Amino acid sequence: MASADLGAELECSVCLKISTDPVTPKCGHNVCQDCIGGVLDTQEGSGGYSCPECNQRFEKHPAHQENLKVPNIVAPKPDQEESGVLCTQCYHAPVPAVKSCLMCEASLCDNHLRVHSKAPEHVLCDPTTSLENRKCSVHKKILEYYCTEDSACICVSCCLIGGHKGHQVESLDEASEKKKKKLRNVLQKLMTEREETEKIVQSLEAHRRKVEGEAAGETERVIALFRDLRRRLEDLEKRVLSVISRREEQALLSDLILQLEVKKDEVSRKMRHIEELCNMTDPLTVLQESDTGDLCDTEDGDDEDRERHDELLHDGGDLDVAGISHTLHTGISDIMSGVIVQEGPDILLDENTASNYLQISDDRKSASKSDINQNRPETPERFQYYPQVLSSRSFSSEQHHWEVDVGGSDSWIVGMCYPSIERRGGQSEIGDNKKSWGLQRRWGCNQYSVTHDRKEIRVPGNISINIVRIELDYEAGRISFYELCDPIRLLHTFTTTFTEPLYAGLLASKPSSSSSSSEPLTRNKHAGIQASLAARLFQCSHNVLLIVLS
Image (cartoon, rainbow, N blue to C red; front, top):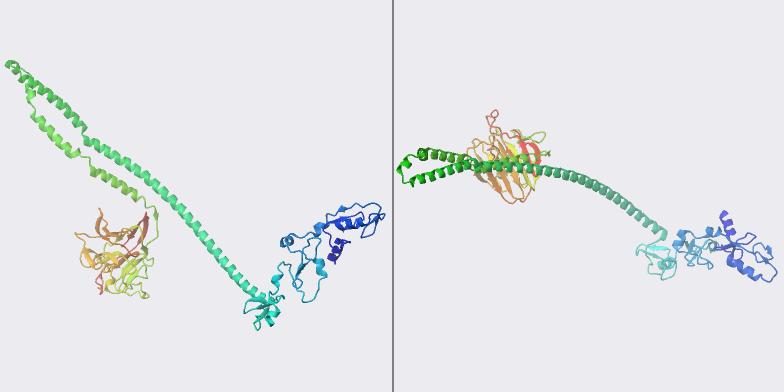
């Protein structure tokens, strides 16, 4: 009711339309500026003027003021202006349309909508400028149905006599709701996918920040490490150069040379005096010369100088390159020992590969031969024939080394192998195939050998190994075995091209009789040793140190 009253107040009494440019005469009514101008013009010469709304008389041409409030009320809303849909019946001014009639193909404002036909065939929709798209291009009728077979919007004629005759059809509302339902399902899936993607992005961002933090910390640590290395190397350089300078000064024998130079001058003086005496013709003068005894006494002095000369050349005449090298190597060794700055993760034994006759400790850091079947599940990875086990960690790049304590053990094998090594049969022993390399001590004799592909090379010499050092250079294709003693002794180096990651491997038997009570022998040819493995891992640049305690 209030809306209708407001519309009546805003209507021009001349054109009966809502005024978009109203003016107000003295009587206070709203009239279009063009309309009031036209009315007043027709009243000229009639003896007065009157308001077209209330007929109030004015003797003179009435002045009127522009109404500033009404245009703000009737002005089109921003969103309506942006839509560009205007009433097609308002010719005097652009008025926003509120509905469009599909039958009339016209857009209507509020005023024209009130007088529009209410017949069912006059279908109203939201304001649109694409009214032709709402009708069938063939029959020029309103699209009311949806053909599910052809996925097309059709009119009633299309259903009855057109190309869609006999097809399954639905109302537009029904088809629209079905499509909306599908779209909502797609929307829900997309929302779920977006949430999952956001979680992944957040996880990756967190990982990136973690990696950046670790990289920053590691960079700072490495920079500090190399700064310290440079300082130590500079100190070592100064110390070695000082040793070289001191040894050089000792080797130059400056004092002896000066003494011999003085003696040479003295000998030259005596020689000149003797020559003068020999050239004298007066025998009495020659015989009366008081220094002739000293001139002739030279033998003992010459022998003494020669002995001193030989002694000095033997003891201090060389630069002592070996001593300088020892100082240099000792200094470098001290520096490198300081590089071990952090403790890394332990190398653990992989129980999934351990033989059922090999006992693994709870912390997976030790192993020993057992006569009792451990009843572990039979898997393709488990060794079935020999009491062997592999490390859980593999090595596929860089340089590594570790040390194994085998003291007190009578028979053992330590080495490396590919993960594709056989787990059953007589050729599954470390060293008895192309996929493993090992150092072994045979039971019952103090004999050591290295093996690969069933080729055994005996280690020469009478040795008794307590600690084995294994070094791996993956890129260079080298596995080296050392006896860790003073000095360290290289036993053998295998050279090849690695094609798989490498695992540390161990074969353990029972302890020797000197280290434990006697045990019954088993069918295994290595019975009689106990090798306890394991583990603390330290990292030195790319090096790995594995200490094995028995």
